[in-house]
Amino acid sequence: MKIFSHGGHRAHEARCELVPGELVPTIETADRIDLVWGVLAERGFKAPVDCLPLTAADLLAIHDLDYLSFLETAWDEWTAGFGDEHDGIAFVWPHRNRPPRPPRAIEGKLGYYFFDGVSPVTQHVWSAATGAAGAARSAAEHLLASGKSSFALVRPPGHHACRDMGGGTSYLNHTALAASTLAASGARVAVLDVDAHHGNGTQDIFWKNSDVLTVSIHTDPADDYPYFSGYADEIGGGAGEGFNLNLPLQPGSTMEIYSVALDAARARIHDFAPDYIVIALGVDGYRGDPSGKLNLRQEDFSRIGEAIAALKLPRMFVFEGGYDKAALGDCVARVLEPSRRL
Ligand SMILES: [Zn+2]
Image 1 (tube, rainbow, N blue to C red):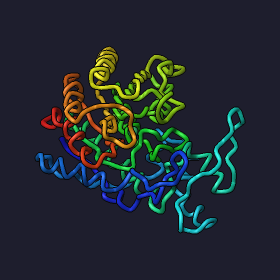
Image 2 (image 1 turned 90 degrees about the horizontal axis):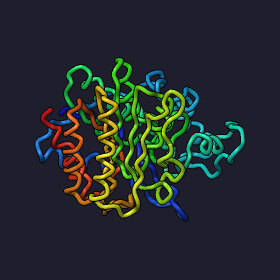
Image 3 (image 1 turned 45 degrees about the horizontal axis):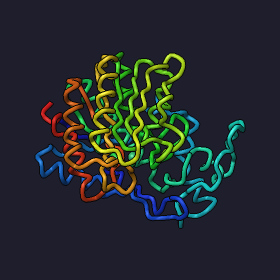
């Protein structure tokens, strides 16, 4: 297994995020990458290859130019209006059932282009996100060229970023970029998202696609973030109808329940008969995670890794959520271990 990363992520770390009732220090910190790599290094994985950032032009298959143009210049617009003492966070969001109307003012644009308050615009958000995207694309190209497995060890996360907006600490959707890169070769691609939160951005980007199957196992959005996406009746639209599968679980679900959903996910992926599978590897289903509501133990992540390997598909992994500093690296390593020799 070859690992791809982008060291420039360190420059992006939000000073705070807006959670219910208060502004708090972000849990999406730069040391998450060090914690994962520390465990992988101990277990003999080879050091990551550092990748170059992409440009907006490289991202048009998965994001609208309008959103990319905003994100690229958002920090400059923000500081021109509000200085650099604070990161850019919205305080007004679009009203329901109103036609979309992007405002001119940066503080309004933040509400238009982000769907929540945990995704601040920082000075280096663009370079960090495009660097992570570069690593994800390189990991996909490695899989295409060699047939061997790869891991994009990247942050900020990506699976909440939609075609035309960011959110959930995600700015660019690296998992979707990897799937899109593989699909551009003419391949059929399945995405399996095991993060504890619905991969709403990946669902959004491939909503009308039948060449990319999107499957997500997550806490029921009626009970957990992102609240407005991830229900079982969201199955894709147009040509993509039937090519999105959401498997929501009750809060507190243990591996006994999780494994039933995992079997259903594997069955759907098997029926789809993809050439490649991309795993959105979030480990915030761990029971000690500060952001998740599932009840998985560290050893359960080994079972998830074995179930993925048993699909016997050429595969790659993209790091997503996971915030428990003590268990994070072990949970990731356990999922990767059954695929590391491929
Ligand atoms: Zn998550």
